[in-house]
Image 1 (tube, rainbow, N blue to C red):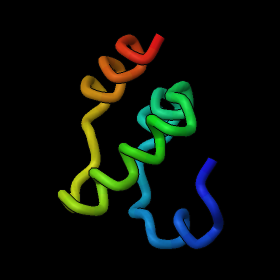
Image 2: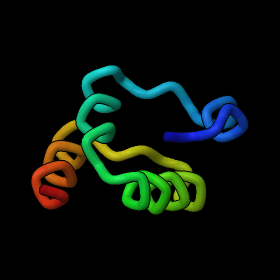
Image 3: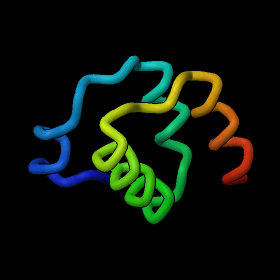
Length: 56
């Protein structure tokens, strides 16, 4: 999971979205976090659901 410094810098995201993203591997979550930082946006719930299914 993310360190305290990473979570303190993150924007607040919807709980349902966070639940979907929690099923990603630690490496996938880290990659996604880097993308969120560089693009300054978070995935939609539909995108998070798709990411979860692709991760399985």
